[in-house]
Amino acid sequence: MRAIVNYGPLDYRLENVPDPIPGPEEVIIKVKASGLCASDLKCYHGGPSFWQGNPPYVKPPVIPGHEFIGEVVALGEGAKEKYGLEIGDKAVAEQILPCWECRFCKTGKYWMCERNYVFGFQGGIDDGGMAEYAKFPKGSIIHKAPKDLPDEYGALIEPLSCAIHAVERGEIQLGDTVVISGMGPIGLMMLQVAKLKNPGLLIALDTRDFRLEIAQKLGADIVINVAKEDAVKRVKDLTDGYGCDVYIEASGYPKSVPQGLDMIRKLGTFVEFGVFAEPATVDWTIIGDRKELNIHGSHLGPYRYPLAIEYLAKNIIRGDLIVTHKLPLESFKDAIKIAEDPNSNSIKILIIP
Image (cartoon, rainbow, N blue to C red; front, side, top):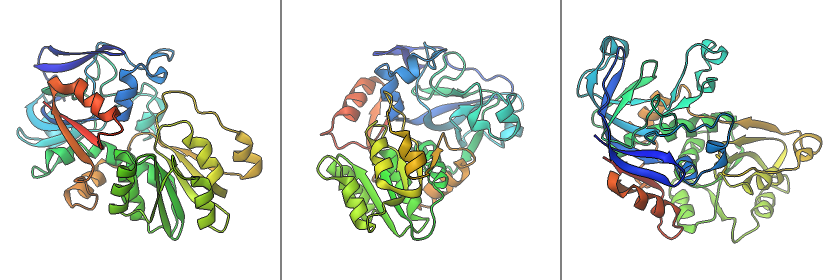
């Protein structure tokens, strides 16, 4: 089969590789769509959080891609019974392959698995979806999706599950002023999920006007271009000087963190979701002595795939304004250029094998 293979920073190649073969309780899919994530871009450029850990998170060579869906074409022994799948079904696996043996897996917190294998980063173990076919290894968490769910929406299941989890970590109350920083694909889905919580005021932040225009169409009450306006002052002016109740950081830009700490009210809740290419530095006195904030991290989309599938299938969460580009495998590097071009008006780019 044809696949994109990651050999190291800036060294991604389109190659012919062996087709995956299913072992016991394993599933092979023909990939229909695979999303290009901001973390994929940071990994491609050698982001230190991926390549300079101890041990490094990325283990090349590996097929990238963790946002993908496909049609079941082969089932290993016992897979049909375990997952309720038939040949021809549409299926998606959660992005993490838990070990099912560590303290987190054994207590139901599988998304924090100590081994932390995520599709598309660990070569030979957890190859991803930027290929014609992909294997869901034994131990995967697999969900069947409706056959009539468009493939492009199927590729949004993974990021939407992350968005749902992050919004839930925000513990939004009725009437809250909620700020979401970063109107990329996940930020725009967070916005839609947060709207379901009935906040009093929902504010979207970004540096690109076209993304803020989409945010307005998807339910933002107020949009602020942080490159053109003092967002902290604007939010405080809107809240009698107190600041927002909940701030969700989804941009992955270090400056967004101190911005949020300044913008949020005392006793507010800060949710960190973004993946950074470099460290973010803040004054921790704000968190403790000055404001006594609730700081919540958000990782992956545990237990939220079924809800993400339902929301997309019922059009409760819109994907039509989020998927902007579809490119074939051989145009992978073009996809990266488009994603990084601030004038491309891209949101979510899909790789279609």
